[in-house]
Every structure is written in structure tokens, then in C-alpha cells.
Image 1 (tube, rainbow, N blue to C red):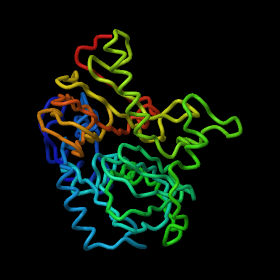
Image 2: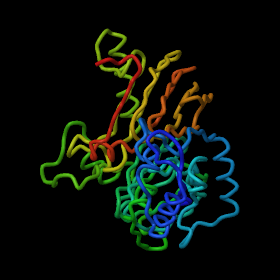
Image 3: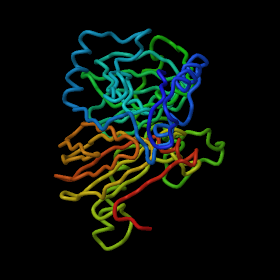
Image 4: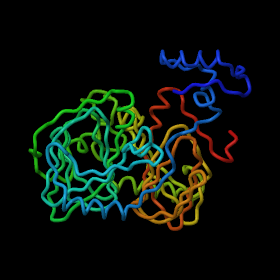
Length: 364
């Protein structure tokens, strides 16, 4: 800890006796609050994570190279490449609470079955041909689909097509690791059900707008819907902007539509630790600067534009990912019509009553 008497406002006068007191603190693994209060109780969040962007083209190229060199099987489990935030000391974390990775599966490959207590999702930027099988329910993965694997559900993936496929994995691994709550367990080495239904059983039961089966119990904390299909997300965003053009309210701000993926049994977030949304901006729109407690990761689904986080600014296009640390102001400018997927740790902070949001120009 290397505690030493220091000068400054409200600090005691440095003396040999004070230095000896600090050495005694170190021997007992103690730290006096008066030397650390600036770091422990700052006037606003000072995240270690940094705003950063990862280029999808580069990720995909490296995933393709990995596909020729790295097998998928028991032990390695997944051919997944995690984003490592430059402010987190080399840890494979996009933010202090969120994991993001590109996963890659070759034609006719299986990723073995396992389960873990961490909550997971898949978001598909491009391609199709892979089914993820969650507790025995095969779920088709197609471009624009948002797919859930809640914690402690057995799941594996199989590619039934003749082409490789890559997608985004998101999990709460860093949060689980930090609080010491992680469990995992192996299932079969290969997926047992290689069927390829267009709709999973969970969708057939739960994914009817405004309707839920009376026979089913309430929420277990995560949404029972295995896949939120792009055609529904696209239609919802389109209709928001159309209604705005007709003079009706419903958008986040002028030219900016957004939807949140929700649990139909509660109306809340799809998982206890992760919020997921889809945003669409008309060409030329710039969002108001927004900052919030907690971190997020954004991925461009379609279009091109620019993202500014704090003092950093990047031009972005399809597939590019941006990490946004806690309380850093973020602004998005759409060069073309721009669709973005967002996931965040907001439910954690809302559960702790620690959430806070500020949007420039909002004086409500």
C-alpha cells in the first residue's frame, strides 16, 4: 500500500510518528479513509474502463483465421474472441460488468453443450445457418435476431449450413467474476438435436404480441422468449418513425426511434443483469449527449455514422463495436440511416437504486 504522511487540505502534518503509524496500518492491512477519500468518494464516477472501438472487419478476419487453426470441442468449449477494454489491465472484459465476443462456427461444426450461471445472449449482424439449442429447444439464428441464453440453461450450437457464421456474444461474466457467483457444468460433447425448425418451441408459446399462455407460471427472472426476430424489431422501429412523420409522439427524440427487448411476464428487462435495445436514427440526425451510471456496448447493425464518447470520436459502420464507460457523455451522428444494437448493465444499478441519467438539454 505504501502509505506515507502527505501534505494537503485536511491532512495531518507529516512527522516521523505519523509515518510510523502508517507503517503499522500496512502491517495490519488497514487503510485510513482520510488518505483515500478522493478515490473512494469522487464527485462523479471515475471509471477505469476507457471508451474504445473494435472494427468488425478486423474481428471477422481474425475469427476466420482462428477457424482454420483452432478446433471447437470440450475444454476450449467455444471459438469466441473477447473484447479487452484497454483500461482494464488486459482482462477479457469490454467493460467492468459486460463481456462481448465474436463467436465463429465453421460449416457442420458443433459447439459442445454446457451451462453456466452467467446470463448470455447472441446478436446476429450477418449470416444464418446456425441453431443454438437451449435446454433441448433448437433456435434458429438469423441476421438481426436477438437470442437469449439465460443463466443455468444447457446450450450448444450447431452449424447446418455450408458456410461459416459469426455473431456477437454478450454476457455478464465480469460482474459474476467480481462478486464470486459463477458456476458452470458440462453437458454432452455434441448437440443431440440437430433439427432445424424455423421457430423454436419457446417462440411458438410466448412470442405472440400482447399475449401470454395462461398455463405458464410467472417469470424466473429472465424472459422465456428464446429469440426476438428482426422482422418484428424492424417493423417497430419503422412504425415509430412513420408516426413521428405523421405528427404523433413516440420517438426518443426527433428522428431517433428505439425499442427495448422485454420479458413478457414482467414487462421488465430480458435478464436480471442485462438491458438490450435497438435504435434507429434518420440520416443526418445527431443525438443529444447522454451520460448514465453503468456501462454499455453498442454495435452498428446497418448504416454508417460517427460516435463520440467523452473526448474520443470514431466513424463507424456495420458491425463496429463501441464500449461506453460509466458517466461518459455519448453522442451519435447518423451519416446514413443508422441502426444500432445496445446492451448495458442498467438493471444492476436500477436494482441497487444507484441508476442516474443526464441528457443535455433535459431540464425536467
